[in-house]
Image 1 (spheres, rainbow, N blue to C red):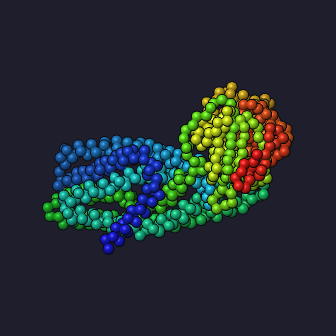
Image 2 (image 1 turned 60 degrees about the vertical axis):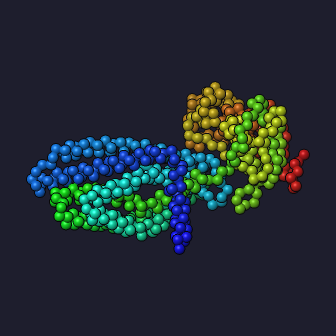
Image 3 (image 1 turned 180 degrees about the vertical axis):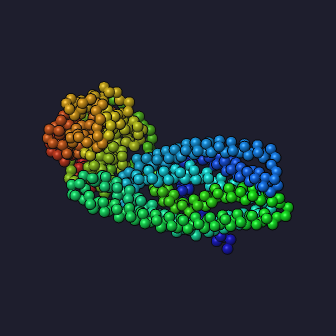
Length: 573
C-alpha cells in the first residue's frame, strides 16, 4: 500500500514537473534573483500595510472605547509605516517593471532562437503563424505572471504564515479559524480549476486560430483581392471572433461565480475571527477592531493569489505554445568543431550522398553527388519538385542532411565539413539569393546593411554597382538614402532582385547560391542580373539553380539534378 502511495506521489511530481508554466523556469534562470527580491519587497510592503491597518484601528478604538489617545510610539510607528509603504510601493513598481521587461526579452529571445533553429520544422501539423503570434500576446501574458504574480503568490503565503503565528500568540482558536477558513477558501476554488482549465484552453486555442487566420490573410492579400474573396474572409474572421467571444463569456461567468464564493469565504473567516475574539475574556475590546482590520488586509493578497489559481489555465496554454516555439527541433546540426577556412580565393563545394525528407513524406531530395570547383559558375536544372530548392538550403547549411556529407573546398582542394565551420565565419563567406526576394521597409542603405551592419556607404555603393542597379533617375531621388516601402512597394521585380543580389555582394562572398533568382524577370532585367553575376568570375564561385534556358546558358557548366542521383550511391562522372 505504501509503495502504491509512493508511486502515485511520484506520478504527481512528474506531472507538476511537466507543467508548461514550470517548464519555462529554466529559460528564466537569469531572473531568479530579481524575482525573489521582488517577492521580498512585496512582502515587506504588505506587512507595512497590515501594521498600518492594525495601528490605525487601535488608535481609533482607544479613542472611541476608552476616550484616550494612543501612546506616542504608536503614532510614530504608524507614520514610519506610511513613509515605508510609499517607498516600498514605488520601489516595487519600478522593480517589477524592470523584471517584466527582462522576462519579456528572455522569452522572446528564446522564441527567436527556436524559430531560427527549427523553422521550417518537419512536422506537417506545425503552423508557424500560430507560433509567431505567441511572440506577442502569449509572451506578454506570461511576462506579467512571472514578473508580478509569482512574487505576489510567494509573499501572500509568507504573510499568511506570519499572520497565523501572530494570532496563535493571542488565541489558538483564532489561528485555527484563520487556517481552517483559508483551507475552505482553497477547497471551494479547486472544483473550478479543471473546468476553467478546459474552457481556458479552448479560449486560447480559438485565439490562436484567429491569429493564424489573420497571418494567412495578410500573406495572401493579393490573392484575396484578385479573386474577390473579401466578403468570404470577413465572414470567416467574424465567425472565428464570435467563437472566441462566446468562450470568453462562459469563462467570465465561471470566474464571477468563483469570485462570489471567495468573497463569501473571506467574510466567513472575518466573522469567525471576530466571534473568537469577542469570546476571549482576557482580550481588551479595543484590540478587536485591529485584529479584524489586520486579518482583512492580510487576507486580501491571499484571496488574489487564490483567484490567480483559477486563471492559470490561460497561462498554461500560453506557456505550452511558447515552449513549443522555444523547443522546436533544430534543422541545422550543431557544429562538430570550429574550423578556420583559408581566407584566399573562392570556395568550392562537394556533396556526397546527401538526402533530405520531411516527416511522413517521400524524400524531397534523393541521395546525390556533386562537385563544384572553386571559381566555377555551375548551372543546375531540373523539373519542378526534383529538390532544387531543398539542395540550395542544404548547401547553405540552413537544413541538415538526413545522410551523406557536404564539404567546402578551399582553393587548393582541401575539404572542410560544412558544419564544422564557425557559423558567423560561414555566413560571411557563403550566401543565398532566392526567387522570392525580401525587401524591408527602410532606406536602401539599411536594406543592404542587414547583411553587413558595419559596411560603409562606399561599400554599399560598390555592391549596388556590381549588381547593375543604377541610382540615377526618379526612382532613387536621394541615392542610397532613398526610403523603400514595405515589401518593396513601387519597385519592379528586377530592382528587388538586384537589391537582394547587392545585399549578398556587400559581403564579398566566396560562394554565392542563386535559387531561381531570375525566374520572375523580363529579358532585359534578366540580362542585367546575369551581367552582374558574370562580373564575379574568378573571385566568387556561383551555383545557379534555374529552369530558364537563357539563364543556364550563361553558366560555365550545366548539370541536371536528376543526373546527379544514381542508384547504388555511385557519383556521376
